[in-house]
Length: 148
Length: 361
Image (cartoon, rainbow over the protein chains, first blue to last red):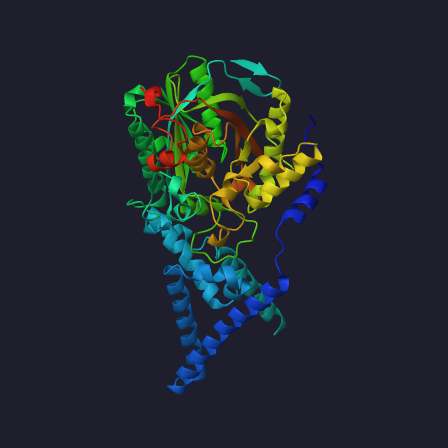
């Protein structure tokens, strides 16, 4: 009997054919719906703070804090990752997603202790965002110094 | 024993499986094979401080269960053959800490159960041992965090991703009479057809499974329908259909008698993507579902394959692909029934002949 004699390119095509097709349109719509809903909740919170006489800058900061709290809480309760299976980018992109990316390793690595576990691993997912965020900020800062 | 063809060994004295046991997580218990498993965890921590320790405890429990079912003492076991997915195979060697038997650690990723079973067959047939305990385990949360991301991190899984089975399985291979015997073993080659996506294990492993199936049939001179069932360890839905197509391309038709443990272990409504994976998948399905079926002659001859994706997260980030492997063992009924194989109520519902427990000593 013969041996498996497929080329890597042929096999790649075959694998793609066997992968279940996911509707990009559906993913797009769900991400829009969930992401949009999170933004709507943020706007409502923001308006409430303004209603209670905070100035717009304060209201913005407080809204961010509340959304981070909600993201962290839903992560701890084991709900956020379940939502993400439906929402996709809709739960990753807003600031609640950033909270999830910090809280999830913090919880996970508590088993190895607060210093070498949580302390070391807490930025294991958001590390790239922080690193390149800071790098970009620095470059923009230098540009500002040179141009203005 | 003697060598057949390139990669197959035929046993002379047919090593026998005298006992087997399994322990599974809640999700696996809720699946279609739930009633077959011996024990179920209340939660993923299994009364331990961490998931890794839970996996160690699961392993200890399943070993104790397999011995208890046939009233064997620990010191009647000559060797432990085991491995798992955790770094340095800790779930296996930590569970063996309090066991007074020589330990041989194996790593074949998710093919480890069948690798251990085949090695145990060689050692028993060659007279190196009387009783060998072969075992393995995997744990969903412990595996996720070692190979992927923290469990609570919200990334969307593609539908072809599989879920690591929380479960531990063990089999005692012996020179005494048991319920199922090993007739041949085929050790597989490493096969890599360039799949680099760590979420597509089924795609990575299917060529290895197809290669070992073809090699086994060639070495033994058999056709695929010699077996009542050819079953792979954890290819999932994607890997299963790929294997069927890869084999069909080589003129080997297996649609009617081929299945996969990873497809059998969950319902389609359990949100597990393409099915189960992990060392525990083939271990618990073989130990608690397949062996009782063979012992009671629902299937006379089965070829079971352990399929392993030899993924390493570090080298994967360096852009490397995923080499894979598959080992096969041919299993047949001995005509004897033993209390060691299957749960009691399962044995009763499967029993079609008069009970003969004389095989167990």
